[in-house]
View (spheres, rainbow, N blue to C red):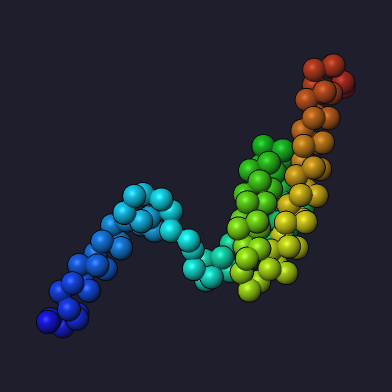
Amino acid sequence: MNQFGNESDVQQQIVDVRTHGRDSVGSPVAMNSHGQERNATAGFVLGLVSLLAWILPFIGLPVTVTGLVLSIRGLRSSRSGLATAGLILSVIWLLVTLANGTLGAYMYLTGQYGK
């Protein structure tokens, strides 16, 4: 016994730090609810950022896709309402971003851009 507890407890904590959220086989370990709450909040914030990011599709696409993924991961948290709002915002602004990028590419290819 040392100041940090049993030696086996300390060794287990070292193993836990080394595996970085993975089990002995290397598979991801389920996140705790605190991590899912962070995902819900981050997904919502990125959904709000998407309100402006769609104007430049090369910025809007990664922002909205990341917001979509984090919102989906946050649906099982205690902040599922926030995650749902982030999911809805991300889906809407992803569609707007894709439409804007498609329209911009079409206008560029047909020579209508910059006239």
